[in-house]
Image (tube, rainbow, N blue to C red; front, side, top):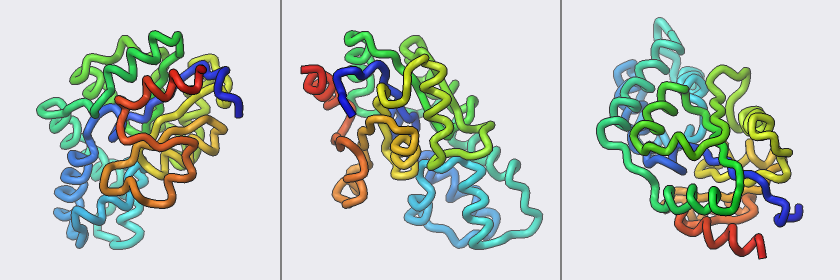
Length: 222
């Protein structure tokens, strides 16, 4: 895959642009515990990068509960996360430098997220970054979320760029699989406690944080 014809960068949102993973974990823990699921904070890491309805059904398959209502449970979790983001959400390290570097290089900028439009709006508002994005795609209404590649393929179409000319930036393995399956160039920026896992070799490049993206874009250009 030649890198010098890179035309677009597509960002995942949770854990890449916004430090929302802790909020997701706490919200899932609270809501699922109330339903009687014997879940720990550690357990919530198993579903990182999955769409919220997939998370709820993942736990239902393992610990079925009475009066199962996926939508109600998913909505309750998302509600908590968006309140949390608007109250105390913070940008991940290097977000603004990364977005500006993409703009300076004339690259189109996309968002491909498993999160709902409600959460996208909360993040865009909190970080004030909506003007940077040429396309915003959510997997919320798709038949399949990540690790299925559809949300990435849709974003490439919305940007008017063929997938091999897109660079996808992910923090979760489920997201990385989706981007690889979409035939995109990939960067993994895993959480520090997961950074040494061998599985990130599936990415074309691993970075510690987004502040390293401008240098990476410069290197593949030259």
